[in-house]
Image 1 (cartoon, rainbow, N blue to C red):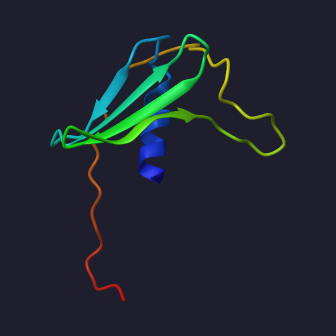
Image 2 (cartoon, rainbow, N blue to C red; image 1 turned 135 degrees about the vertical axis):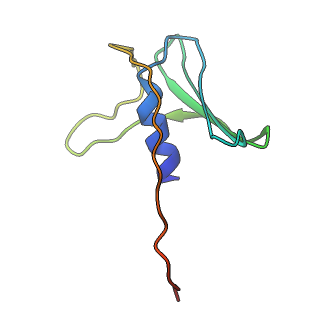
Length: 95
């Protein structure tokens, strides 16, 4: 779930009201979609093998000593790009 949240945060800034933005895994099996409603509410949806596994769900942030973020959101700036990184799993046995 942390990986999904990180992806959501990374491309949330590319959203325009009512427009859906998608990120798809290299093998095409995992798709994450984001939208911001006209009321300024961010929503995400996750599909695996073309089957919806997380229905459109509200996205927000609760910060320490701050009011929650999640309504009246707006796009301030947007920048698109690609990331190509490799993560090596450590070899060994876990108990």
